[in-house]
Image (cartoon, rainbow, N blue to C red):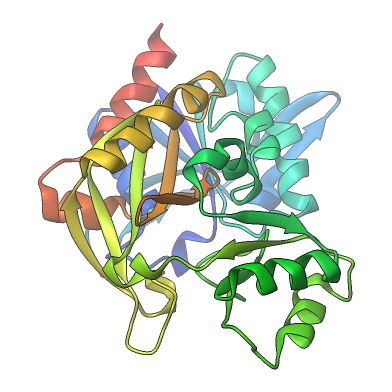
Length: 316
């Protein structure tokens, strides 16, 4: 009997066909004979204590002109599925948290959720990295202007960024004696109402902000180095960076081995580590990307490896 796989994602009509990781995961599952069921965040609900989803059976194709075909959606218990892959992009807001509550209910009803709903809540992509402070450049998380100004004064060349952003949005680099430090702090912290992250600037960003993909705590042996565009400090592809696939260095492998056991313990089956130089900057757990680029350039079918891993857990 076919394994029923659900996916919760942003509107499939709006994806970037050539780069989208969720599409690659769906196609890999379909190729293994799974039935696919599509949902968006607003389709999740709890009815009489049971987790439900308004789900549409879907087939996908690697065709840039017609990459999916959806049937009519209907409300069904999430427990009708054996596996649900949560791929909703940030922002990590209250609606995202409510979705994890619903998915956690389904998990208690026997559905494997990737990634684990509680860990999605617990492991903010910026703050979670601070559990591995020895692997990071000097970092502070605060909303206090005095601490942020002191951090800037101590380190001179720093990065300030929000805790809930993605794709390099709202990231500021402040150099020594920057005249805009106060207004940037006011803007990012909403006048002291929101926590942000401060990190010492890492000059090796010119060699790439590297994405290391982790499957059940083990690193894919290739990374995507996202090189900033001219005049930029952000390597994110969404911010105009270009990607080059490279083999993991010994240092990067050591970083992955240090973090991997914690990911495995927390049920974080698919994670993207961001590494600049010798330092981890973020641990992306909500909707890691770069599968298509790494697979294309390395010859490793990353989506296939992840789906194999998850289906093996379903069958156990």
